[in-house]
Length: 493
Ligand SMILES: CC(C)C[C@H](N)C(=O)NCC(=O)O
Image (cartoon, rainbow, N blue to C red; front, side, top):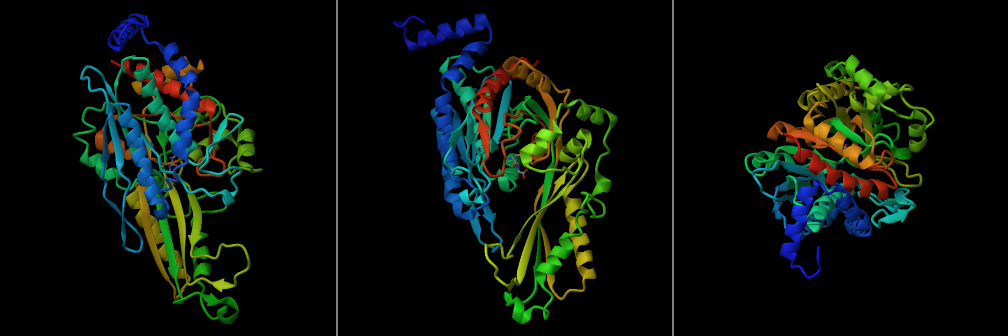
């Protein structure tokens, strides 16, 4: 474009040129490459916010995070709203404002398809003393890996989507589809408030949405992936209450039935050492593994030894690939996460805790139903507790009940994904499922829209763990993938 030309004329020329030349992927990708330092700085700013949704003391940070997201989208000229989704009730009966959900819209052309990108900017807790090698909220680049809490889950992928739209804008390339965003701040603790918001906006925000795209997951290996299923999650508290206060174990040990012993006793009845779930009714509900599915898993390249190395174990529950993948993706599992009220500090306190609460969850797969699981678990735990003839009191509560999700890999959204992956990475993607949980089933049930999950996280990003990271490569090439994907989706007829 000649330098003496005004901005309007220049953008008209660019548009005409791009229309004549087709989709200017190379120029857009070059733009991304030449702006990668800015993208890393943007991630640094976001990672610096301790937007831990599980810690009520961090709630002001979470509100600030949502404002930052809204501000960024506003600066890009989007139509942005911060949607109030109400309050959260805390275990002591008090209430706390939920972080607002950010919605944004770029383009409103009825001749184009509309995609809606879902993501979240809340994170899991992280402390240096948990064993991080670097400060978790200070993004640190080591050998091309960007370490920081929330870097991969899910701040970089949300930013990559934003930068993809920005690249189109910066080069005056018309967005091939209308793009909407829905960004929440409670994903890590069960998407509190989001379900009602999706229902409330079904006929407004979601009415013109054609497709929903989610990038809140990772690849299985170094090969890019497209994800067609997630497990749901039922999260439980089991509280055992005994004496009215903590007791000295020398003075009272032997006199009282200890709540912790009861609790550990009943927790031990949930799952066998070989991973068999012992709660009646759970395994019976699971959809059988089909031959076609078995074949799909068999065809996926997956290095079990490398997987073991990365997580630092000498042995896995299953020693063949198909069994392992099936148990990660399409069978339920019980995980015991912690015990509130138990002594866990360093040292040798000799206490009998008066009240202890175990926290455990059961990942959900087709055809399990969270309401049925709640009943099965509650009845089962009360029945095993009754057999102990303990004078203590047991209370079982289900605090999260998220359904699994499964898509048809033959859908055009998946074909579009394959084409975009091919363009950016010059290879075919793995088609995989995800063992983790996001509110995708709710989007599906309420909006009825087609959904695809397009991950950019690496297989070894360490989500929820110490030293979470995303590589620069995945962040930057992932941004290009989103640019290419928007173009592929616009070709769907
Ligand atoms: C890999 C998961 C789908 C990532 C997601 N952000 C998450 O952590 N969800 C909560 C969960 O416990 O699965």
